[in-house]
Image (cartoon, rainbow, N blue to C red; front, top):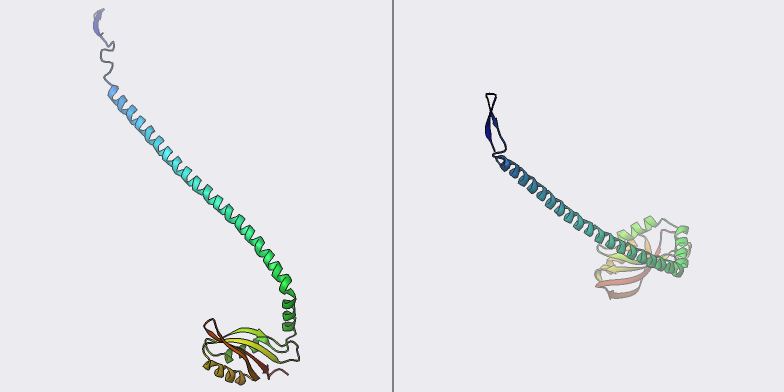
Length: 191
């Protein structure tokens, strides 16, 4: 409803909304863009929350597994403590006896083991050592694992070179793919 009104000789143009929808296109574009932006933000938030929820679930499962392992380790620790205590009761006296013998030492154990190491042929090793029962005794009983029977002769010669005397072989056997020898000898260096 637009019209021209002449009043007092003036020519007035009055726009009575003759084209009211002329500027709607930019507003629609802005509204659609804003709607898409909000939708994209919501989708992003949902995906972020799903990812966070998945991480939370993984952490919860990990915590549950750690708690189970901690419980299992506690049970295992208790079992091992009981086992150690039973071994302590069973062998405590023998260990104390051996420790007291070692404390009495009539000679240097470092020097003794150094001499034993030099006497053993390459690739051979000591399986057992029974030290003397008293400070006055000089007799040692050992069990050695050798690669072959030929090394027994070399071992006896090396022991004699290291001032061990009266070397006697008590027992020979083949066990665990090794030639094992049990022998007794006396230490000539101990007075």
